[in-house]
Image 1 (tube, rainbow, N blue to C red):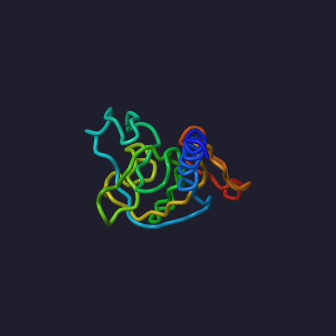
Image 2 (image 1 turned 60 degrees about the vertical axis):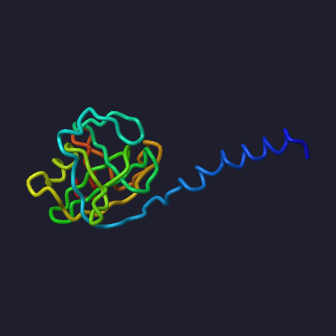
Image 3 (image 1 turned 135 degrees about the vertical axis):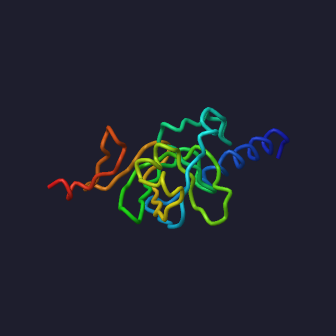
Length: 150
């Protein structure tokens, strides 16, 4: 093989690697503690280079790829919200996710600071793929079960 062919094959192999490692199974669920970003992080860059906005529905997760959409459920009050992963963290060992202040407010965890939550993968690349019996309230960003509306 020529040098050029080896270089092209190597580049193709490395180009495919991020997709292999970045695939996340829709519906995957984990439970644990969630906290939220302190106000001082508003306007700072995330580890992906995006500006953190505490007024948006954002989250930090240790392993999910950038733009993974997650449904976070507060297990104490059953409130749900969908957030987009745009940062790495949390760095506290006993937590599974860090939320923006707005997401924490919608889940009702501002007063306590930490809450027991369930995290479910509901979409990728900023797109949400819900079941036919679910929809998102456009004003609040919360997940609404169509059965509960009937």
